[in-house]
Amino acid sequence: MELTHEQQMLCDTVKAFMEKELFPHEEEVDRIGEVPIDLGRQIEARSKEVGLFAANLPEAVGGGGLDYRSMALIEREYGKTSHALHSWIARPTELLLACGGDQIAKYLDPCVTGEKRELFALTEPEAGSDIMSMKSNARRDGDDWILNGSKHFISGPVMPDFAIVFAATGEDDTPRGPRKRITAFLVDVGMDGFDIQEGNRCVSYRGYQTFQLHFSDVRLGPDQVLGEEGRGLELSGKWLGMGRIWVGATCCGKAERLFDLAAEWAASRRQFGKPIGQFQATGFKLADMAVELKAADLMVVNAVEKADRGTMSDADAAMVKLYCSEMLNRIADHTVQIYGGMGLMEELPIQRLWRDARLERIWDGTSEIQRHIISRSILRPLGA
Image (tube, one colour):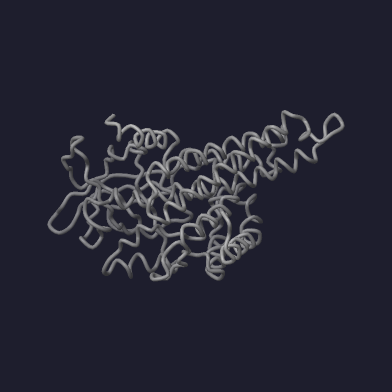
């Protein structure tokens, strides 16, 4: 992507911020498995000072108003460090733009200012990739809704103030048979019947938290429906589509960091009297890594251009997420191999980046789900 003057300034700002505020804390956060709350709040505060906080939301609601191209540049740079750290620079979910009436002051505005944090709660123990197997449900009780169910692998940097919870509110007949009607609800932490606990600890992005949410007869008012009843999947689809592009961009950033480390090592590490990069086995790995990273970057650029025009499809987003996440894992593995035993030593960042890379093929939709979306886009127009 050829950068405008403003975009170059943005990249320079992000790089300087990360060098000063994020990179120095990587090893400690990985070692202790958490971001100390004081450090998280410091990152949050300083990101506000430089204009990075809530940069993805429109200026009309108090956000930074950055377009998709600019956000892709930011996400690519963020990918070079741990999600546990850069997630403190909030990018509130764009689903909150569906807030109306009193919801704006209660949920949207506080997330833009950093007074509140939200969780996107879709995944369930028995309904990860298979959203239609969702067990969480909400039934009407007069004007209210009664919510029951559970969610897991719901991630965020810190205990949230509320969750955007997706639940089945009925069933519709479609040409392909009965289909659950999914609705999004705004559910405040602390409500009667809503229990939220820290969940499993992951070896990728240590310090980035997962939460388990349980709902037992949680009474929700009509003003806690986000958007329209039964339109929850449309809302989640908008977020997930661009979310997969941002995953692709972060994968490119992390891959570039790994590639630079691998190239420097290949040029300086000597065996048999010469740099190991001069041996074909290593040099060809570097060549393949460079080609794959270039291809991945171009895929992200193409998808972002389509998103700006409003023509990006689910298959476009799936291709980006699939290719970029698998590209990153190949580059991470090659980098470990080029470093040899040193690549697995805790004294170097290679092993940490290698561990972090593995999660990218799973969250925001596994590689298998992305292939399903892509194959479906090919076959459905042909009647299959």
